Length: 238
Image 1 (cartoon, rainbow, N blue to C red):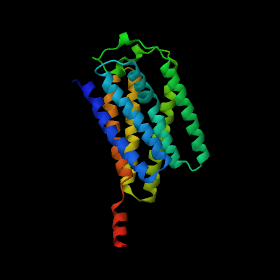
Image 2 (image 1 turned 90 degrees about the horizontal axis):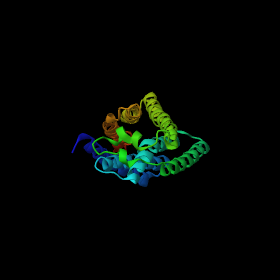
Image 3 (image 1 turned 90 degrees about the vertical axis):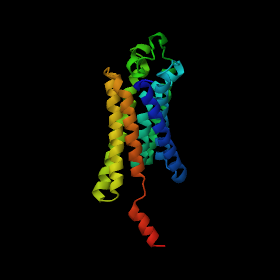
Image 4 (image 1 turned 180 degrees about the vertical axis):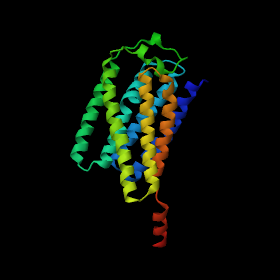
């Protein structure tokens, strides 16, 4: 198997572990932000799986899933989770979520009605390098993608850096500071890889996604790790 066939499988495996960890924490603690992160990460994982599938064979529904979940929606849903974590005014978070749901449904409709040219597909090249030939250049769904990605980039990266700043200023939980920085770095990395893809350098997307998934997973584990000092104090108080 070639590199462009292996990397999506690795990204899918990392994302499967990441999704399981987030939903496990949601089952234990609840929290809308964890649910939305889980949904966004599931979309990321579906996009990675679709890349892995399309590296060996063609399926129009898998392609539509790749573009919708992998290229368009996942960053926005991850960012919406951060909105629920940081925004105190719930009516604002609820309003943004309603807009995101409606926008996602509209993007899904546009994706389902986009004609595809399967004759342009070849398994010899990453799907990120050939999707322009498969989809019409002025497909309406492609016009919606920047809005989702910019919203996701601002909320996810901005939220992670803001959380890191607050924790650093309080001089508490240094591992959570590092964890939030890793999450922001991972989000920036996948955004950079996606930008390069739109500029015609799609060969970097799969590596960028794998590194981004690894960084964000590591950041999540650090940010949710129970501090050793807190555990020691609890033991001493027994």
